[in-house]
Each structure stands twice: as C-alpha cells, then as structure tokens.
Length: 138
Image 1 (spheres, rainbow, N blue to C red):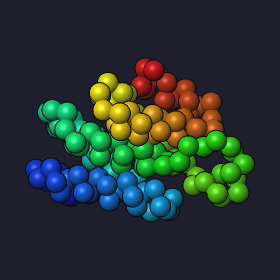
Image 2: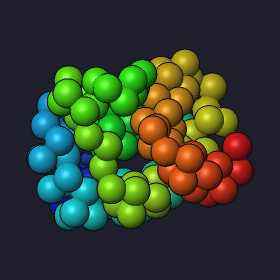
Image 3: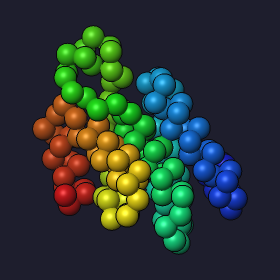
Image 4: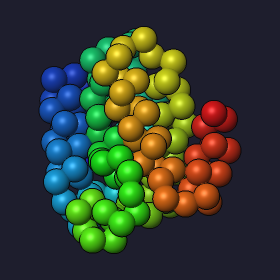
C-alpha cells in the first residue's frame, strides 16, 4: 500500500493494477487487502489526483475488484462458490463516493469498471443497495 503514496505515476498505476489483480483472484487475499485499509489509501490517492489521468482507470479497476470483482447474476452461483463472496460493506463504504465521482469521467473504461464496482457493492441485498444509493446519491 505504501506504493500508492509515491509521486511516480507509473509506480502508482502498477500498484493499483497489482492490488486489483490480487483482489480479483482470491477472496481471502482481497479481504486481507481491505483489512489493511487499501480503500482509504485509494480514496486519498484519488483526492490527490488533480487532473483526469490514466490513474482514474486504475483507481476504477482496483475498486471494482476490491468491491467484489464479479457481477453477481445469481445468488446460487455464490452459494456454490462459483463466484467469490462479496466483501464486508464496512471495508468498501469509503469507496462509494469515489465511485460516484468516477461516473462523471468521460473515459469508457472508467465507466465500465465503476459500474461493475457499484453493481457488485450493491449485490444480493436490499440493505447493500440502500447504502450504495444513499452514499452515492444515485
């Protein structure tokens, strides 16, 4: 996570991709990353970005995978462990305002990952949907 605070955009981009890839591949590792306050670090990074850069894409990608990584079409798939379980909402709540802000970005890839992140964050539960709706205002 320390790499996210560096001023070198290339290193930060690679660190975001690495976190996103690790989170996507393994729910236990994703949860470990979340418990290390990765979302807070990404939110801090996002707030420090002064212009729309390629980092928006990498922020959206990392948050998408930290929020769950896969679109949950059927609860049955989750119950049979075909899909990863969603992360605890307490760890991803801080990402929701960033995701709402990323919806304003004009990059298609950013929109795609942002919408997938919001879809997975709000999946399978009315409570999760209400929290996402309240925090994002969408």
